[in-house]
Image 1 (cartoon, one colour):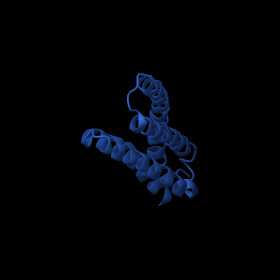
Image 2 (tube, rainbow, N blue to C red):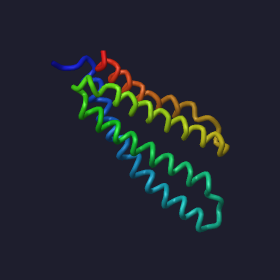
Image 3 (cartoon, one colour):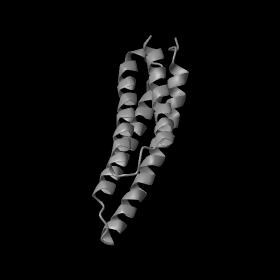
Length: 130
């Protein structure tokens, strides 16, 4: 029997796999960019912190996506998927906080867009649980 939120969780999981993979690639390119700035003598502490959070967030998003696709028909794994989704949201919040501390202002639009997919993922996991 198919769980209630299985399609929801599977689709959001696939999108998270793609997003996490792209995020890892972009983060690796960002590391090279920050290293170049550091070599030029520019202050790069906050940039390195931001890139590290980005890498961690992208890996967590990739893992969450894989878990969602793998466990979309397993209601007993719904809590695990919910924890993965919450972890993605936490990384996004930390990234936003670092951005604000660095003086970039509050990225309202990107913050909202960044929250949509993990929230939908959590909703799919919650539907699986029910």
